[in-house]
Amino acid sequence: PGCQRGRVRGHAAAEGDDRPGGYNAISAVVDDFVANVAADKRINKFFAKANIDRLKRRLKDQLCQAAGGPCLYLGADMKTAHAGMGIRNRDFDALVQDLVKSLNKFKVPKVEQKEIAAVLLPMRKDIVTR
Image (cartoon, rainbow, N blue to C red; front, side):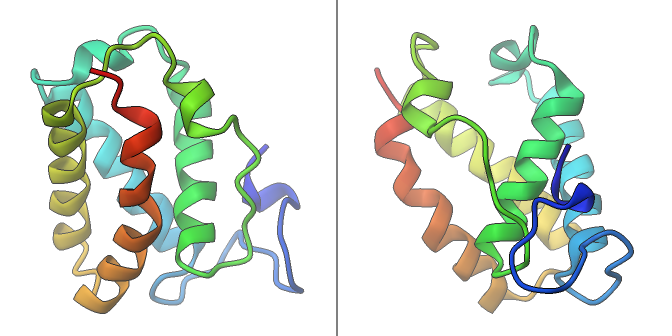
């Protein structure tokens, strides 16, 4: 599963895409981001029972799509995926901080960070329930 196996739009396969903002760059950011979240005592409890490989695949597809790449996110909508988790604004903010830390580590340009934020931040209303 994941973008590299054909859930792509357009004409380019994503696997092996080494351009800045390409799938390999997104993959590296997501792997680092998930490690940040796992180490983040503020929010790692929300991921204790998660299928981490599936989570990474879906995050990669989601970020790839948000960055205008060829991937399509085919996971559950955010409201369904986070139902019953009791996520608060401060939890969402911690997750965003962990993502920004990874984006900065990999020197993702601020323009691209803003494009990703424009897609991801509106999801707050479907994820935060408390």
